[in-house]
Image (cartoon, rainbow, N blue to C red; front, side, top):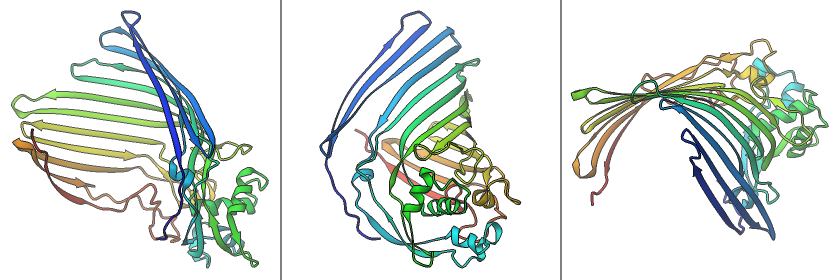
Length: 386
């Protein structure tokens, strides 16, 4: 790993305030404001943001809530000041492979899979700060003692989020531009073509993936959460928790002037899970405690869908995947405790992607799935008691 140069100076100050005002017996309003200012490279980047919320409790067991707010975040110091650094990377030249007829299932036979090239990245002093508008509306219902059900609809509109392209993503995008699958005159294609260097024979020799601002990203989601506690007398206490989230909308615009991409329908731009479910059962009794945690993710595009879209023969979604983790702990007096944790309790492997052609070291999307099987951890903790 080469050393990375870079350095800079930035000063910052901020002012905040907040208020909670119960102006009616059943209605409460919350409001907060914040002003941030950053001084960098002789210029001041500043933004005032606010958040307003309203809660209405018509009866003791029911609460309605809503909120609207704005957000602001300056790029990190590394995003701005990191110097340019390069490594030797091994990537797939999707354009040259397509020229030779290697796409989809047979791309693993392409001689330009795992091409050695120079991969560079750096920060950018010209990055814009991230801004967002966020609102949500929901309710909390408590029909049973020690239990509650909450449901919320959330919406985000984000501008100038800072991101780093992967080398694979960049070369896929550059190939789509050269092959006419994307408008070669679009800002996305102009950037992709400028970040990929090819020699006189047309072979890729270097790529550049700097930090960049994503022009716009809009997302909406629905969440549902259930909590319930049950006292078991001499057998301790059990607490159940279940949450479900469903991504209803996710659109993306890389650069101003680009068309918006529906990431829920275009797997060549996103492999995010549309839905997720988390559940846990926690038991405590005297010095003993244990937790069973379950995580289930929905379907994800297979390799062919990521490579060529859902319209391609053989493209589709992989099935949902469920993992369970377990923890058991015993605590003594004087701050000493011991525990055992088992990750992937049932030794579940990721769903098999039969469209995977062997272009990488793992036969699945390693950004979404982990190949680690059942793992055991022992922990002894001491916290001094004053």
